Structure formats: structure tokens, C-alpha cells
Amino acid sequence: MMTNAKKFTNLIKNVGNRLSSKFDFSNPLKNQVRLSKAKDLMMNIVKYIVLYGLAFIIIYPLIQQISVALRHTREINDPSVVWIPKRFSLDNIRLAIAALDYWNALRNTFVISLLATLGQLIACSLAGYAFARLKSRVTNILFIFVILTIIVPASTISLPQFIYFQRIGLLGKAYSIILMSVLGQGIKSGIFIYIFRQFFKGIPLELDEAAEVDGASPFQIYYRIMLPNAKGAIVTVGLFAFVWQWNDGYYASLFLRDTTKVLTTAMYSIQYGVHGHLQSLGLWELIGADVTKNPLFLSMILNTAAILIMSPLLIMYYFVQKLFVEGVERTGIVG
Image 1: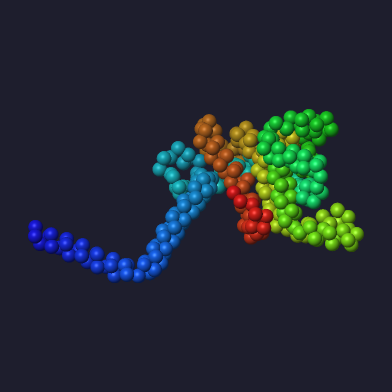
Image 2: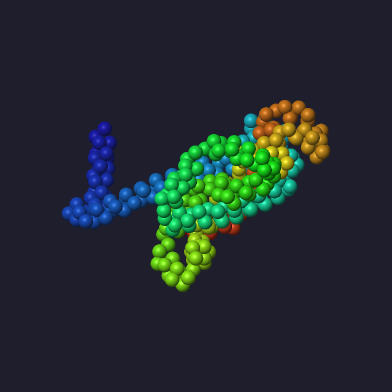
């Protein structure tokens, strides 16, 4: 017992000697520097733990969807299959492409999203320039209504828009969504107008005054001076407008109906065409007729369809991520 007590005492003394050697209590400045380094190290550890945790939360559903899409249909109810399928199969992708009418819906979605984005850029940049430079009581009142469009849900004003397009004969046509964007009533137009307004307010007024001295009109100032200096805002608004229009299902189902098929509306009706596509692709005998009554089967096809819908956006973002980050930094968007 005495020997163990002596060993423990010696251990305590050794630890104390090591601490005293590292922390020179006679020199508080060195101790403060070491403590600040230790705090920085702890903050970096916490920061990386939080970042890796958030990355896992974001990437986890995507990895799970890919795993489900490549899984054979007979492994739907197999509890032993979690991440890596025992049998890889592309049947789910083939079936989802057929059920979505993928290539036709992809073309329609791309054209509508591109034209709507161009309309958003033209309308919102003009409105943002007017609110930033043409000061009056009327513009201030109108800007309040613009802010209200951000707050008010889209469903509250969709009924008057529906009735209007029905009267002019544009209901069920892609022109309805494009016309809304050109008139500044597209998806999230209020946010885009606000972004352009704040960006144009940051441009010095001396540029406008110099252009006015040279005889430039307000529209010429907007076209020749404001737009060339607003590349960051244009890139940011363009990317957001394109992505939001691509993922839109509410306005597409309301105004396009069944006449113009886009990816989101095709996904809503995917469960009604599964039986026919199973027969046309020759997968009915392989999978079995009873599998369509299994809710997990429909969930698997919907997961695969979701991957097919967002794959073009992921590919596009890979090529424009540098422009997107620069645009966000220039416009000062946070959150």
C-alpha cells in the first residue's frame, strides 16, 4: 500500500513539474499567448465539427436517394440492405425516365426556366433601377407594395392571376409563366427587385450626373452604366431565378395544367403511369404485378425521379459555382 501511495505521489509531482515547465508563472505574457493559441485550437475543432455535421445532414439524403435508385426492386423489403445494394440495377432509372416522359419534360422545363429567368432579369433590374434612382413619394409607396409581395403568400394572389389568364386565353400555355416574369410578377420577383435596388444604390451618383451632362437619358444610364456594373447582381439573380423556376410545382400545375408537361408536374402524376410503363419496358414479369401495391415501390420510383430532376441543376452548378460565389459576395446576400 505504501509503495502504491509513493508511486501516485511521484506521478502527481511529475505532472506538476511538466505543467510548471510549460507555463512560466513568472512571465504572464507567455502564458497569455499560449492560452490564446489553445483557445484558437479549440475554436477550430468546434468549427470543423459543426461544418462536418452540417455537411453530413445535407449530403445524407442525397446519398440515400442514390442508394435507393440503384437498388434492385426485389430488395425493397430487405432490412439487411441499408447503404450498398446487394444487386445493382438500372431498372428504377429506366422506369422513372419513362414515367416522367423525361426528355420531353426536361426540354420544356429548360426552355420555360430560361425564358422566365431572362424576363425576371429585365423586369427586376428595371424596377430596381427605378426604385434606386427615381426618387418620389410614388416610388416609395410602390416599393412598400414590392416588400409586401415578399411577405404575402403566393396562394393569396394566384386566384386573380388564374382568372386573368383564363380570360385572355393563356391558361395551359407556357406563355403565362413567361408573361408573369416579364411583368415583374414571377417567382420571388420582390426579392430580386430588392437585390437590384440595393446594388444600384451602392453605385456612386457621380456616374449618373456625368452621364446626364453628356446628354444621356435615364434608360441610357441604366443600359450603358448600371447594367455593366451589376454583373454580380445579374449572376446571383439569374441563378436563383432559374433554380426556383426549375423546382416550381405550384404555378406550373396551376397555369400549365396538363397541356405543357414539365418535370415537377410529371412527378406529381408519376404513380398513375407506373403500370403501363412496367409493361412497355418488359419489367412486369421480372418485378411482379403485386409490387405496384407496395408503397415502398412508389417511394423508390419517386426518389429516382427526384434524382433525375435535380441532376441537371447539380451539373450546372458545378460549372457556375465560382460565378455564383462571386455574385453572392458582391451583392452581400447572407443566410
